[in-house]
Amino acid sequence: MGSNVLKLSPFSFSKTLVFPKTMFSKLLPSPQFTSFSPKTNYAGGLRLSLPRSKRNFVAMAGPGSVQKSDEEWRAVLSPEQFRILRRKGTEYPGTGEYDKFFEEGVYNCAGCGTPLYKSTTKFNSGCGWPAFYEGLPGAINRTPDPDGMRIEITCAACGGHLGHVFKGEGFPTPTNERHCVNSISLKFTPANSSSSL
Image (cartoon, rainbow, N blue to C red):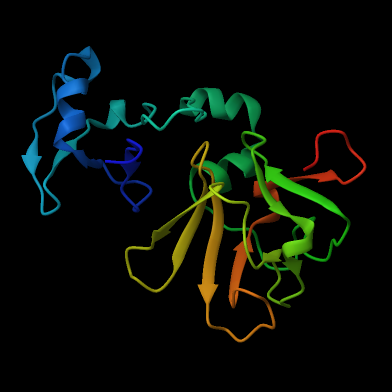
């Protein structure tokens, strides 16, 4: 079944979680889940309605993942980083630190430090946000937005919102993709640093 990842509903303020039935049996004994009433959903999983007071719990993720409560994230992120990384916000175009930044190195997740992009994959798309044509293998998850118009990209380790990926725009890149990323979701490590890839 691959990695067991619980994903919050794409609607950032939704009260619903959907996950496979096999995971529900592991969660049921936990006191924080005993008051929920499961309903079968179209995907064969269980739909659980969370009381408003329980919505800041930490979803389970695969091995090596970064799990923190909202309070823990607020303690380590600036208010703007929290708004974008944890609440799926967006920077205004042309305002980000890395939009027109083209030094050699690695771009890491600003939330958890996971390496996401090599600078060699960054290009000037003119969109107002940093653009990359591919991420590091296994570092980025893709999830279609509810409207089906865009594909959200998130850090595979901590689930932090990065931005969106667009395909087929005709940029002269090997993948014909543009990862449109919020600068505030990234932290750059120069190539001459000992921690860069």
